[in-house]
Image (tube, rainbow, N blue to C red; front, top):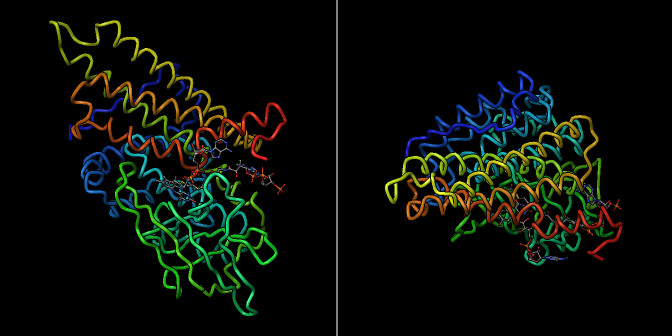
Length: 392
Ligand code: TGC
Ligand code: FAD
């Protein structure tokens, strides 16, 4: 792979909107990605292997629980800092950002928010340091966009719960030490359970043959009469709203993260357009290529402003779920279109692993689907503005 020459675009001086702390956090993440991700990520993706050696570095830049209080091992940062960390990591690879999103927003967040003090103290510091890795089981083979229909369930057996069912498409499942599993009680109410690797009847087979997020491990969660200790239920919230609150946090991180992938594609295509000559001129001098580049930087700038404003609303506790849906949908779509256009600017070289663009493009095909598909987020916006529910 070519050396990492990335220069971050900032067309509207958005840096002026950031605090010194936010810029420092971003700079640490950016340096780490250049040093520890860029040199190894292409090979990891080609070999479809999650590079486990990066876990320590992710913890080091505060990517595990950026906004979880320091008392529990988190970094105690604000939401914009969290977003900037996701942006820098996804500039390297969406699969690496997935690992950080799941650990922070889908594992640490529910334990922090819905767990008791004992659960917080037992799990959060180890998750923050990367000693424990977690995964989040909501999607099932027959229930993806409609998680409320889930069939995974547990029965109260007096001194423990008996868990049965299956989850699929679960990021980090093949190596996770714990899983936050969403399952229905005998009354049909959804609860979160902490399931630990090693519990009898619990297995996590890996999903192979992915053309996307190849540097991230994806798998199933299978529960065959798993005895879950009663102290492993998250006591402070039940109902579908609980996992959806976790998704709000992760979708917010994605809205920022994909800006990084888009920036990397734009930066690569811009540099290439000035270096590559055809018909005796740099290809960047042709109007058709300039149109692509001009539209890319326009869309990146709009996405940055959307993410920054959403971050300020999150910091003030005012962001709605529908606002988060809009940003996730818009920014992922923006990044995917930029990746496709950037790939064309590189011509044949665009399909080569010498450059990051095709990897970003394939990764973004998962990002546009997970955490709520492009169409589901449109329907959430539609419901918000009309007051009419298209799902029911
Ligand atoms: P609905 O009846 O609308 O809502 C059920 C209850 O939940 C409340 N609620 C929310 N609460 C918090 N945050 C939100 N975003 C919420 N949205 C809804 C709602 O008020 C209600 O509460 P209550 O008290 O009245 O019961 O639910 P529905 O069954 O009609 O479904 C709505 C829908 C379709 C929007 C939702 O289910 C949805 O978002 N579907 C998409 C599924 C999804 O995003 N799955 C993601 C799986 S995890 C993943 O992909 C991880 S990828 C990780 C990585 O690698 O980065
Ligand atoms: P479906 O729900 O079957 O949707 C298929 C198509 O139908 C989509 O285009 C959808 O938009 C459309 N559709 C569905 N309902 C409607 C409707 N009402 N109106 C109009 N169109 C509709 N899940 C987890 O729980 N944890 C994870 O860690 C996780 N990681 C993932 C990692 C990867 C790499 C991938 C690919 C997925 C992951 N997922 C995870 C699952 C992901 O969240 C689901 O794939 C996603 O929610 C969509 O569900 P589905 O694949 O079952 O598609």
